[in-house]
Image (tube, rainbow, N blue to C red; front, side, top):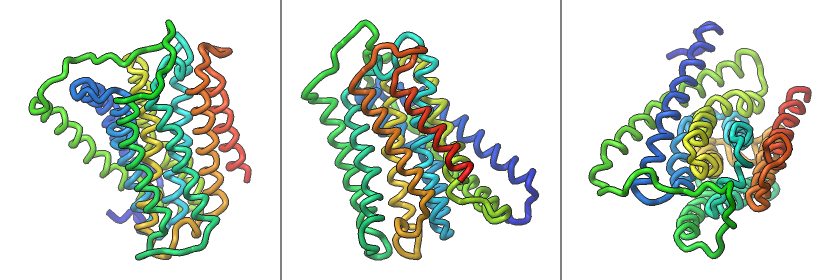
Length: 343
């Protein structure tokens, strides 16, 4: 499809349809992930953080990789880090609709705390790469390889943290335990469940590629900031599954799945940077970025740290029904949008 020949209304319509496909698939994947967590016995926090988080991030992965292959470093990078900021803000919105207690208090789970710290570590690695020398091996900066190694080690450690925790959160009346809704079954009977999940993944991948093409055309045609388009347009649209799956999980009472899905999705999103660096053929992507791109990286890091503090502090019920972490997250994200809009 020649996107350059399409009119603006048609481009926007294609963008909207692709976003709707991502949204619809994401909603259906939430219920499937919850059932998979119960049947496999892996738990909501781990399945939400790894399987659901990575799967709902597929469309964003395709956007970043496609942009990088086209030589659009800012669009590829800002789509990834902008999605992390947007998805963290979605968790604060979920806290607003969960009126029984502060969501981070009720969803107490050591695996989520661990993954929050892991995410902060992963977000700091690109900063080290930028501050260091511009070196590449086969066109890839060593920091991109480190991101993958740290992520995989973190996934293995998350499983161990859940299976053999060295400390446990204090139970309160507001704490929502992760209790299976289904009895564990023979995994051979789960094939249709995983097949449906895979089909939904394929649709999300195609929709992600379409969004990347439309966004690139809009940047060129109207001379828009690639960083702003990536952080506030493609990142938000490709993050819609996280918003819907988080709200749906909260309504289902699967609080660990809601929190784990956001944190795990954000953790997986850091691998966008590795894929973007591999796809970007003009050297290290970390040294081809603008100040605006790193502004969104810093925003995501600050929001993640606030969330991590909230998970540790576990405020029972803050003013207005939300905890200090949710209020702080929304304030930082809103402030970042205002700053970027007037810059």
